[in-house]
Length: 139
Ligand SMILES: [Zn+2]
Ligand SMILES: [Zn+2]
Image (tube, rainbow, N blue to C red):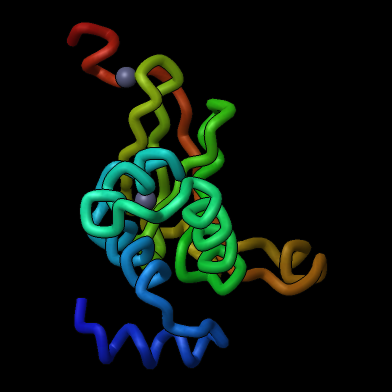
């Protein structure tokens, strides 16, 4: 991801561009495994050894508040984060904690029933499928 494009994105989101924010967001965009804050911290520390776990938590929260990162409601106590802002859904394994993406037509914002629109302002919607993955089932 280009730094200049990111600076514009942060500015549009009302976020000050800092090196730590950049590194956390970059780690999120590159991640495909929906990492926990602690996993993001371990990855970011490789290029910024001084960054604290608390900073990573706060950075993820501010990115989440602006819709740049989403929190995947998995089921484990540990929050997991997603840097892919494109509309997609999640498969969550309750055994290994693995989270995978899937795309489903007819499950987007446009497909929500009218009572949802009447409820308030919707930012995003996703389908969460929970169960046990093939690997854990030994298939
Ligand atoms: Zn599994
Ligand atoms: Zn995802």
